[in-house]
Amino acid sequence: MKRSDRSADEPVQLRDAVAAVGRELGMPDPDVISALSVSWPQIVGEPLASHTAVRSVRDGVCTVDVDGAGWATQLRYAEHQLVQRAGACCGPGVVTSIRTVVRGAEKPS
Image (cartoon, rainbow, N blue to C red):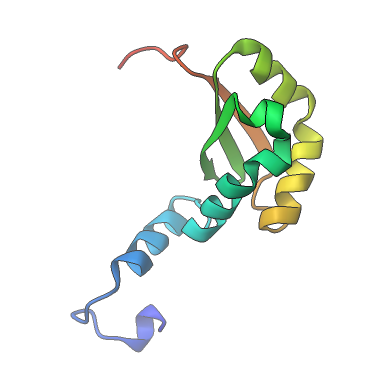
């Protein structure tokens, strides 16, 4: 049901509300993130998958947690192939680039 097809006081399923907010923030459908996370070992390969995890996707940028700088470097070198594989999994344009974040290397808030 489109937003214009219902009155403003009708309830909306939480899943639909979260998906709508996500779209406004440049995030894909939650099912896409789930599919990407589940398929991550096939996308990057088992050795790399054990050291990395999908954190988020926003405006095509897939942010990946990495447990060491060496693994981040491997992801960066393979970025083009990984974007192609993610496209095969989730659809073209969902992931257009990969950003790595080394766990523990972020500045505390």
